[in-house]
Length: 321
Image 1: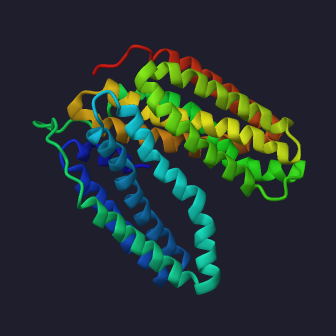
Image 2: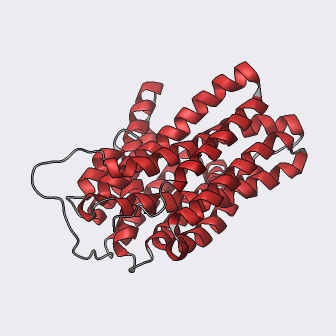
Image 3: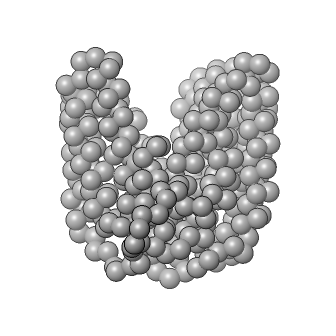
C-alpha cells in the first residue's frame, strides 16, 4: 500500500511496461524465496518484498490499459484489464491448493515463479505510444485531483473489508457450510459488472454508472444479515456486479480528472486509498462487530456505501480531459 504513490509517480517518468516487468521479476524472486523461508521473521520480510511487486504491477497495469485504450474507451479498457485480476482471484486458490496437495508447496511456488516470468515475457511484446511525461522539478507523489474519487473508493472498500472479515462467520451462523461459494459468486458477478460497467461509463458518463453501482453494493451488504443458507448467494451476486462496475469506473475517473502527465500519480494515489479502505474497513468492522454485533457491522458498512454513492454525484461532469 505504502509503495503505490511512489510507483504511480514513477509511471509518469518511466515506461509503464518496464515498471510492470520489474513487478513480475519481484513475483519470480519472491516465489522462489518462499521455498527457502525457515522462520516467521524471514517470511514477513519476503511477504513485504512480495507486496512491493504487487504495488509495481497492480499500479502499472491500469495505467498501461489507459495508455493503450482507443479514444473514448478508457473505462472499458481499464475494466477489461481488471477482469484478469478477478479471474486469478477466483480460480487460482483452488488450483494452487490442488498443486500443493499433489506435488507439495515447493512445486506450487515454482509454478508461481514461472507464472511471473511468463507475465514479464508477454509484456516485452507490448509497444507503448509516446505520451506526455512529467518533467522539471519533482512533484509530490500524491495527486490531489484523485482524492475525490479516492474517498468514494474508500467508502466502497470499507464494505469489502467488512465482507472479507465477517462473511465466513455469517455463513456459519446461517447454515452455509462452505463460505467459498459466497466469494465464488461474488467474483463471477464482478466479471459481469466489469464488462458492462466499463463500456457503460464511456457511453453514459462515470456518475451514471457509479451511483447505481454503489447503491447496489449497499443493498447487497444490507441483505447479508437477512439471508439464510444458500440465499446468502443473492447478496454476493448483487455486491459483485456493483463492485465490478464501480471499481474500474473510479480508476477511470481518477485519470479523467488528472493532467495527462500526472495520470500515473493519480492511479497510485487511488490504489493506496483502495487498500486503505479494505484494511481500515476490516479493523473498523471488527470493533463494531465486537461492540454491537455482526448485523450492525454489515448495516453500517451498507450505510457508508450509500454515503459513497452520494459522493459519486459530486464527480459528475468534473473530467478535465
